[in-house]
Amino acid sequence: MRATAIALVVTALLAGTAAAAVKPETAIRYRQGLYRSIAWNFTPLADMAKGKQPFDAREAEKRAARIAATSEQLLEGFPPGSDRGAETEAKAEIWRNFADFEAKMHDLSVQSNALLAAAKSGDEARFKAAFDPLKQACKACHDQYKAD
Image (cartoon, rainbow, N blue to C red; front, side, top):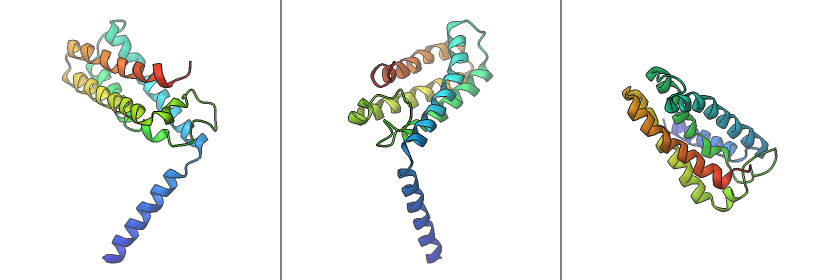
């Protein structure tokens, strides 16, 4: 039993070390993939929120769930040193103001989960009301930390 516990601790430590030692270009590709996934799912939600497409509660819930899950993974795609190593639109200010960046990432997660709850309710008005705060959370980070 004790040997099993020790093996689990060692495995966890090695996994943490491997994650910390990720190459910058790998982190950049990882986060870019996550952002592409968010954009893929965000666009139909925006169209529903703007009335360009009919509100579909099941579709909204599916896409909002994807964004909520993805938003919780984004921060790990910004390890120290991943401001270079491959083409990136991430500004160096991210790593100079990481606490603020982290707070903005947290807000993105909070707002995406709020949109998910609204979509799950099936209430179109609630969904539309929850969409703008998510959009603003995205914009707040892009305005400060994404190169044009």
